[in-house]
Amino acid sequence: METRQQGSILFSAILVLIALLVVIQLWLVAAALDALVSRQFAVLVPTAAASGALFMLSGGLLWYVVSYDARLRQWGPRA
Amino acid sequence: MADERPRWREDFPVRWDEDNYMTRRELAKFLTLGSGLLASVNLLIAFIGLTGRTPAPPVRRIAAADEVAPGGSLLFRYPTDDDPCILVRDAAGRLDAFSQVCTHLSCAVVHRPGDDVLACPCHKGSFSAREGLPLAGPPTRRLPRIVIERRGADLVATGVEV
Image (cartoon, rainbow over all chains, first blue to last red; front, side, top):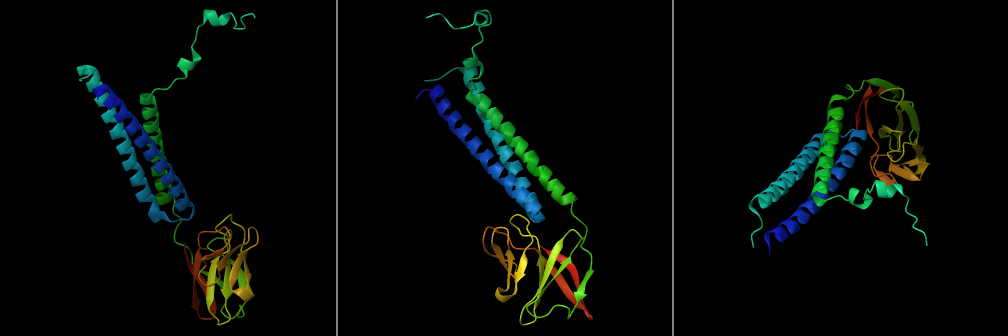
């Protein structure tokens, strides 16, 4: 399999993973709002921390895939 | 059949299909941006929750200790005049107090003495009059319990347990 094709599959997989992380973050926002309205303040900090961690993970995945792409462009495809 | 394409399209050949095309890389960046926005919203919610807490609830007299007959109930307001609550005394004389606001869509619950149930007439929800737990209907969260104490001949409310 060519490196470019591998990269394409990797990119698709990472894209799906980032989308999944965003869905989890949507759920976290809904849970945090629910906790805020029902005055369960102990839930708010863990949800915010989890959401921040998911954002870092998403950013890390994006950075990885962009740098992978840049490396590929710099060195060219290898068979 | 005449060509129906307007002439200006020849002068301004914008390819809308290409213009609206979004690459996977752009989608990934868009999703990550959305992820950042959601994380910011979550932080904002936590900030509001931690800084906007109301002060400790006041101690307020509800009623005289013998004002509610066994099997009866009494309406009062706590911690502010905008928060309706209900005090219930069961047949054995046990006293329990809860917020009167249904946790489904905020209708006022009423006491059904025979069943020891707090019923919401709007959507037929019901709660246990002893624990405040939802028994039937749409509500899924318990009613906030009002902490009450007997001080001399009076019943006083001292806090709210969510």
